[in-house]
Length: 342
Length: 147
Image (cartoon, rainbow over all chains, first blue to last red):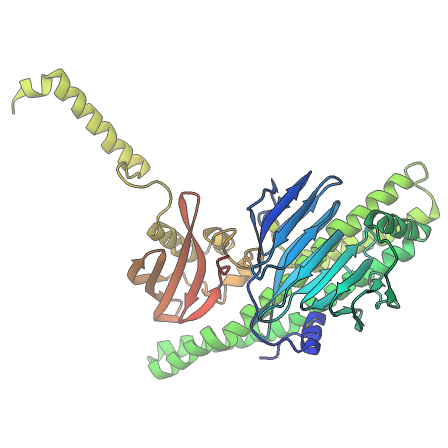
């Protein structure tokens, strides 16, 4: 079956990573300060050393918090203060790929070689494919991303464009935009709080343009999901047609035909449909995450700053775009979510 | 019947205790001498009952919340409707439980006719939950690879 081609898929193909991957699960090896985990039911629980982190679960650190996770191949993930990090997974060509997502904040990775498909490292605005690499990913409150490579090679992809980073190189990606010019970070002290504050100030200089960039990224998720929908519909229609045929074959007691159709429904079109459904859910849940942590966070910033001047033209424009994003979210994404997601 | 036997206070108390235990067992379905929590068989029966009742929104709740892969993705009823078409006539036969794995044959929905089904189970507290589901050797819901 033709799989939906996602940016991560293009990247993995570029890197020539084709062997079967591992299933993602991380172990908490260090916890400090105010650090919680959001479990699969959406409940916030205290994170403790020794706790496993499963696919779909998040670690949330406050200003005093940090946590270190370890993957089965002994790769380490260092989650720094004021960060929301999620462990996820997508299925590509019937293989699973780990997705390490930073919604906001900064996360440092020391990644050993993977026996199969390497993980995809994502923020709201960029995707990085890595293998045997040390890197830090900073995700700003405005949806920007800064990828800093300490060792190894990283391919950073956004808005259909890609840049390859080697040791000691870095690149910044604004939400919904292609990667910027890569630069050498040697001799420059990168501090997340300062960088994030800078991003926020930059955003506040022209918040409407900043929110448009975030909207572009959300649009990419929407597009990713909507590209799958026709294929999913086709698979569902094919499934339904074959199921009708099966019912007729059963009624006619044509056991040979029924047996062939059962095989097709369980292993053929039924499997295509199942995988497409899971991929669609991945995009919908990514959209939800960005809407919750970036769009929600920025709106709070704007509301606080314009508390005494709610009729300011900039705030009115911002609010209108914000409401448009929420409307699209409600109309396009929410139908693909269930109550437990929200 | 020897009425004096029943009248003996010790025997009378023992009789009342046994009666109370029997009533508890009947009303609450608890196995007073056995283990607590949901057994493998009870979990699987309950899963099939929910399919037959059309409670597809509920099916993910039979899966282990931390040992099932893509637990978040399998929550919608829509995930299940092509795996178990809504005909309400599913039954399991030849159930065999070895360790925490249950194999059997599923029939129903026209799609399954004595088809091999395997449930891989894991405990969540006292209750057994499904962590992986295979039908005809195809993994429909996968489990995490043990750490």
